[in-house]
Image 1: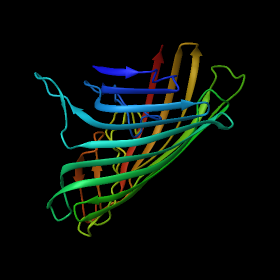
Image 2: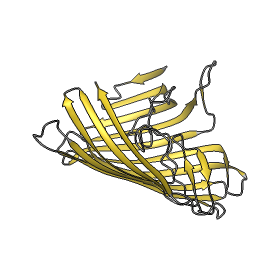
Image 3: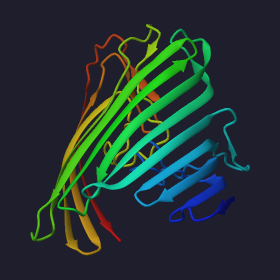
Image 4: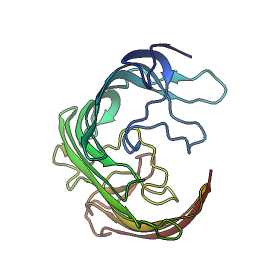
Length: 282
């Protein structure tokens, strides 16, 4: 349940308080993850100012922990505060999206395995021109800083992609390339955390549709083609080449949890390739 005053989608000013989804950009950092059995929701207060080319969203939220057999409750003490701006029609057909996210919470440990609270701040800029134009692209830059107890946080991530739709060609082919990078930690005992935190993403299909990987200590280069044999039918073929960003850090799954780590770096960085083909009918 939630209470909304105004119209969150089109009103000049609106505010919503209660249980809700938070979806921003392409949901690479903050999304409801509808591919999960239980999509992600938040107990949150969100306000939006929407005027002309400028929109600003401000929110204070806590993620809901779904538990079978009882009423779900948010995680006490695990808070996310944010400011998300959207500037439209400044670049031809593109939007500029600067934003700031602030994560606070307990239950973490320092590199010396001492209990600690986390204070993680993310400053980011996303520039996006949507598919549907002959040329589409995204440039997404993120920087994280703060601390986990006595350890300092210093991490970053980059996503660059571009697509080109061949005009007047049969099947309306769109060719695209994409590069995603998220930093890893080179030393597990130096008091500095360099592993990028993917926060609360909708990862499905971003780093392979098998969903084995999250955006932490990862390099993913992909290329593909989209075809439209009919108005409602889209066929997509993609190839991925996946590596760890740092051999001394670990492999993280789609939820962002550590799967395995070879701290001496002897396992190398290469994870493998994925080739996928999908069809979608609306």
